[in-house]
Length: 79
Image (tube, rainbow, N blue to C red; front, side):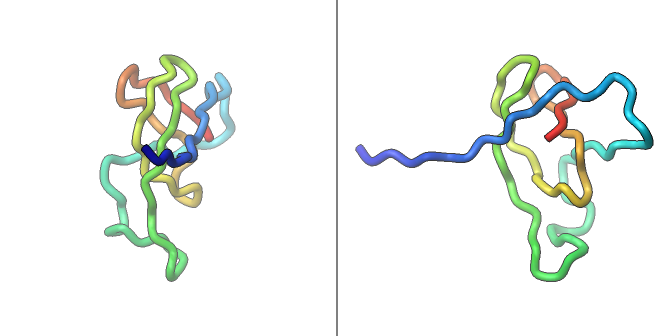
């Protein structure tokens, strides 16, 4: 059976005190699937949680989001 490698983003525990606000992931893209930059779509990626090591699908968009929520333990993850 052929195998395929997949890329997994590794989440890390956010700093206890962050300067300013950090946008959190949203279940649906806020701008109908398109980034502010023309020609770049939002994409799904897989993230491994630092807390429970569960794998979650995330909308990966570093322009809009910096913190992602684990779908299992609800821990905040920064990438």
